[in-house]
Length: 285
Image (cartoon, rainbow, N blue to C red):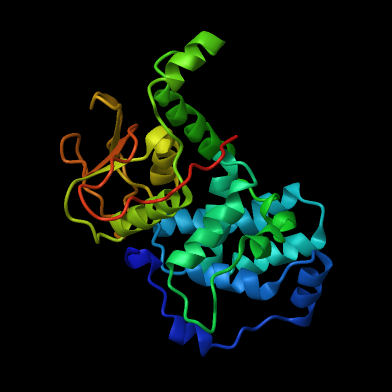
């Protein structure tokens, strides 16, 4: 079942009128982008909560800082338009976060899965992977600042207790059995962090993210401003983040032993009863 961040008021959305200027529509057309697909994706990310200060910084990044690195004026126009709303900022940020760790081929799978599990009405079927693949021009241009990519690298390296990258050590690491997360796990990761940030989770949770716990930690820290610990498969603490963003909407508990979120380098276990989640691993860079 989707968490609160993923629950979409589709009836309300279907009754809204999408507003695009002629200039914006011309920009979408020049890049072969479907504005309706972008709008649906924006709605899918409309209920996610991030700290106000982080949202302000990201808005400035998408509207001012990243455009300085781009040369296509149509792409810059679309970025500015999307970044004018909180949901657009969240959509751009999520895509860029995925780009930092997963291969570009994984992005359509993640977003299509998100569309499917949001339970859209029959009149608005889930977005097929082919529709999202058509957004390559936009998505491939999105990336987050270096501090985020550094966090992804540093936290992800904790999955390998051996810094040596020789074939033998790589084989030993693989034999530990850690798998990469699948699309439902990745979407669930963002939903859970959003609910933590909004103060909707009041008990300690341990999340098994396989080899991708480090990526989850970077997202939890840099985007959602959460406190957390990272542990290995045996429960050994590998990292602890006690700091959190001081905004009123970032309500994760502080303090070493009081941290309510544990991200574990451990594969998801099979349920005692009920269907096994079919969540094929995504490809990472």
